[in-house]
Image (cartoon, rainbow, N blue to C red; front, top):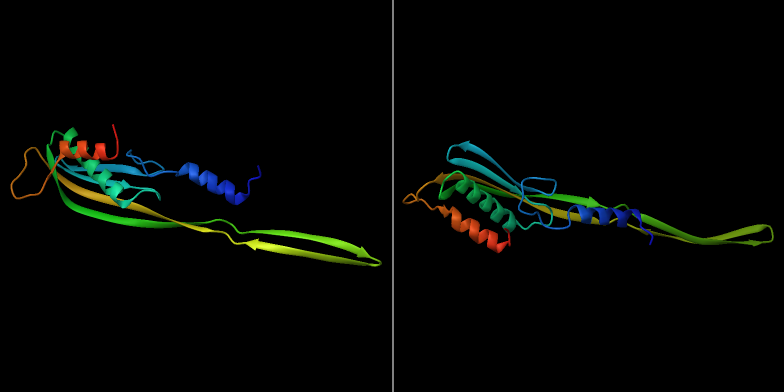
Length: 164
């Protein structure tokens, strides 16, 4: 089997980012990160790769927020601020040309005939979602503030994405 530069590049790219970002700490393929800003306040980010839907990125940021709340002894949390964006990256494969031809000797003359075909490169566009949350945690649900139940949210999102 003969591999061209383009096909080899695409095979390697497929192996590197072949599926949506899993629920994991930040790595080459994306993931979550968090910072504790106060005893009850956290900033959570989730960055997806080019195969990750925005909904998945937002859900995984919420899942991380719920896990943080639980691990610090809180039962619920409120989202104080949220930001979502998408970065766009493009990748263009190189173009290729193929030449075929023949030559013929007639007397003292050489006649050449040939054809060159050019195949332009292809451009691939990847949309990488990012979402950030600023959360405030509570040990008991406060009145007049919408909060997420951390235990319920962890169970619900892990079930949705079949996580353990």
